[in-house]
Image (cartoon, rainbow, N blue to C red):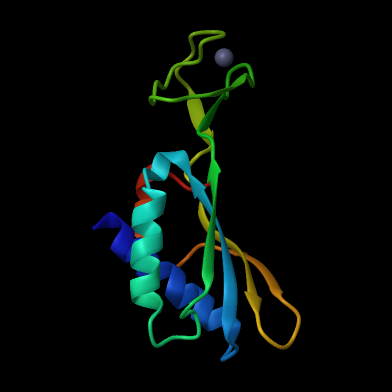
Length: 135
Ligand SMILES: [Zn+2]
């Protein structure tokens, strides 16, 4: 049900920015560490979008690879399974460089020009983002 609360957060954010205009496209950046299943997210998005300006909007999901960066030597690398030690210097003082994104990148609306935004959806996402660690 993770995807349901994420969908609600997306729709709330988009509705706020759409300002009453009908939304045709929502571009999303989703980090791999979010462990979101794209089909499930799309399903819940359609469900939550009903009776809002997002109804019928296309959801485009850009998956961001998970990368870590070693603070000791600045080495950066991509991970499949989280392993929080630098393979170059074996240091453990590392930070997530990418992969925890969950952002609405842009929306397209009918009428006035499309709005460009990068906004973390509000709601319980805030807590989740803090757990993982915000930049
Ligand atoms: Zn290192």
